[in-house]
Structures are given as structure tokens and as C-alpha cells.
Length: 551
Image (spheres, rainbow, N blue to C red):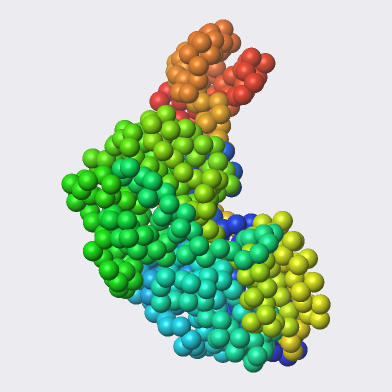
């Protein structure tokens, strides 16, 4: 950490810890002279699939509290995993109050491992400012691909800030949480020193299509479908499910969910009376008793996840549901970068089974939850900020957004920032003044354990080259005998390695006074020297001498 000296007058500091320079792990520190809060604390899925056993990354809570020991509250913009997925780690390290909308709190409560961590969850309402220390935070409704998404307006002694959260401008959302244009306009007229704004789709022209605009395309496919329809989209997208409920009713179909994640989101939304008419929703057992042309299955698997409902149905069956040649599968989703190949294989497998498959490549059946250029321009027009900075995106998106903002805001300062930059708002001006450290921990999701570099290296070595287990016995006279077992190593290679051991090591005489670790080092050196010219990739090697794992 190397922040500059304190400014002389009151200031509001903004320090993004994640999500600015990469997608995911969104987290931003906001700090006055006496109060420090955190906006969002998400996870990041591995950008590199060559990291075996890493389910996701989270920020290191120890480093955060080391740099910001006075951190005293968390404010959450919405309930996507890249904004809330790290909270169990943060709250496990130190209990903090967490402020969020009711639906977001429901998702957080479901994810926390015990009731003690949920004791400090605080429900908020739109446009009712929360006072925390000398900071005041107001939640403002925006539209996104999840219920109750919000932007945040923050007022402190040093200035004012709007954090856009993830958003787009949907003029016709089918719920009770519209984009609050009027409130944003009022805040803009009162004065906004800095707007930090979603860059995810900053390179795309026009307005992002609203949810209602994709319904005609989905309706046409539903009309053509002779039998059951399996529709997959992101499981958190209850706004789309609400549209689908009206669509299903108009076409004489009932909706059944397949996949735990959909059932979780539907249950939490139902507790908030989000669905006015629940008659069109049935259980899987009820759906199986209906005629095929009266069923719409909404299923997990939009990214061809291995254990998702759609993958399991396609692989032979799931919960009594298997594919028929009269079925139609609709992908109302985009491929997240890195998942394209898996999705292509899934589509091919479905078509091989005689199923009709529709994707957004051929039909207007999906829309993003993130702002295009005209959405961004609308937000800029409403809030009239003195200064701006792009957030939420990789460097390519940030840079394009930055260039565009400079044209749109010629009188103000437009900052190009990345994770760890300290932005200081003071007397209506903004500048970058320092740099903080950011560190992500790789997590094995099954146990929620952080993985060390050594564990990651061992897993990668085993993934590419396998594991060799060398069992050795050394007599009191120093005579050695070795055998080798290979796991994930070709059988001929194991035989060749065994021959090497017999030739190079079984003839060795060890000093009985040597320790197990000294024996192990000698064996490892000889084995490595023997293997290197014969194998391009060296397996992970474990050596056991006289029953003790020594290396």
C-alpha cells in the first residue's frame, strides 16, 4: 500500500478492489475521514480453465482488513454472484452489517453457512437513505437481469458519488422495480461530483433491448413447437421468468423448473410475492402428467455446465425427464467467453437426438442486462456528473468507455482507473492519488478452502502429466529396493520408469546414517535425471521410504 499524504480538506475516496480491469470479483471501498464502507463483495470464476480444482476466486479478507482496519459496513447493489459471492468469507473473518434490498438479502442469507453470519443483514428500501458514520447511502432502482438491482448515491463530507451498479435502461420492465429516471435526474440537478459506470457493453451501439422486445421471438418458437419446450437462461433472471409466465399462459402451457438454482431463485422471489399469478407454475411431477404441448420446462444449463439439468437430460435423463424427438430446446442466453466449445458440443448432441434447437444466433430471443452506448448516454444525461470513471469490465471495455466519456463530458475529468487505484473526490474535483494492494484467493468450492500456490501447481502437474508414487525400502545395510505406481500415466511409461528404477536405483547402496529426507532427496535427484531425457512432461512424484512419505 502506498497512498499519498492526507489532503488538507475533507475528501471522499473511492478504491476499486475488483471488477475494474477484469470481469468479476466486484468490490469497491468508499472512505471518508472517519468512515469506511464496502460496495459489493463478489467472486470471480476462473478465467483460465487450466487451473484444476479452482471453482472461483474471492478477495483476501485478511489483506482488506489489514489495509482498511476501520471497515464497518457493506452495501450491495444486487444479488449476482460476482457481487455477493465472497460475503461468506468476509463475514467469516469479521462480522459487519450488510445493507441490501429484500431479494438480494434472501440470496445472501441462502448462501451464508450459518444463522450467526446472517444476524447483521439489514433490509433497505428504495430512496430511503441509510446513514452510516458520516456517509449517507441511497438505493436507486435500475433495471438489470435480476430483481431489485440498484445504483447507489453516496454523500459524504468530501463530495457526492453515484455508483451505477450493473444496469441497462428497460422502459417496460414487467415488475414493480422500474428504472428510476426521475430520482436520478433530481440527484443530477442537486450535483454529482463523480459517476462511476458499468462498462460491460460500452463498445456496443444503440440501446440494449428490453425484456419485452424478445418476447415475440420466443412466442413464435413456442407456437411452432409440437411438444415440450425446454428453455434455458440464467437462473437468477426472474424478470425474464415473469415475462415467460405470461407467455406460457397465452400459449396454454405450464412452467416447471429443472435445476436447484432455478428453484432457489423462484422460492425467494415467491416469498416477496414477485409473481402475481402462480397458477401457471407446476412441479416436475405435475408437468410429467400433462400433454407435451402444455409444458414449458425452464432449466439450468445455459452454459453447458456439467451437472446442470439440461446436460443431464441430454445425457439420458434427469428426475424422470428424458428427451423426445418432438421436443424443442431454446437457449435464451449468450455464451460466456470460454464456454463456446462446450455449448457447441451440447447443441450437436441435442440435434443428434432429433431435438429442434434454437439459439440467439438465429432468433431475437435473448438480451443483455448491461447498458449499451445509448443507455450510458441516458444515465449521463440524467445525472449530469462533473466527472466520471468507467468500472466493471476488462481493460478493452474500460478504454473504449473512457474514450467515449471524454467526448461526452468535455468539461469534466474522465479517469481511466484499475483495481487498487485510490480516487480522491475533493472540492468537486477528482484525481488518482495512490495505490492499494489487491489479492484474490483461489477457492475449492466443495470445501470453501483457499488453495495455496503449491496445491495449484501440484494439481496442474497431475492434470498434464499424472502422478508417480515411488515406494522404497532401505535395509539396515543400506540396500534399496523400489517399485513405482503410476496414476494418470500411460502403462508403457510406468513400465519404462520401473526399469529405470531397477537399473539406476536398486543398485545403489545408501548410508544407513542418512535421514529419510536425505535419502528422499538423493532418490529424487537420480529419478529426475533419469526421467528428464525420456519424458517431455514430468509427472508429479511422491516418494515413500520405509513407509514414510518423504517428498
